Image (cartoon, rainbow, N blue to C red):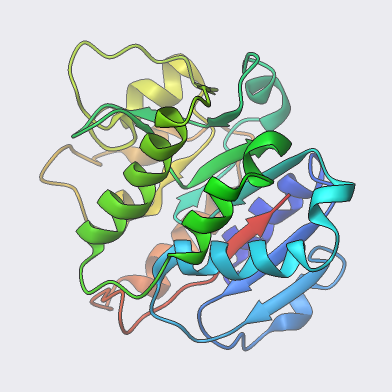
Length: 250
């Protein structure tokens, strides 16, 4: 478990009552999660982040999720952060049934799944339960995005649930702001998360990461990012071979 992930969990701990940490590989250093994660599930699987979300969700259902909690959040480790405190950003969310950190207008409008929160009326519904049970191993990441990330938002909207998003960025075009406009999102709209893929050399044909260090607010320990970049620099990231831990919190 990388240090930037530990930092992220420490921030989540300030706003979350309980944290369940789910990894799709066995964790070599579980002691680093002591005092942070209330439950650790490290179970090898090839179902990407939604496969970890599924395992965490059904574990929590068996432990009284429906009776004891009002909100359920799915969060993964695909971002560095938080670059800014989470609470003021979350307070920008209005009344809704589910919400995310950002809205994506590519393909079809949806909430991006690296940080998405569901109210009780959603996570207790049969629609949601059936969707989570349907998650399986997909051969292509694109299938994961279309079936699960986009598919979940569309399913909930089609069944009468409504959403909001925390970072009130209003793009002129239909693009993913976490990639195409990541600098503006951070500097102008205080987007608290930066996609790891950018600094690991992926998605850079969409944008530039030159002088990325100047965009990171002083309050974030930038050495955590540099340490992770150095560790992953020589690896060819194949989602079927190199699995990083996924966060599941509520």
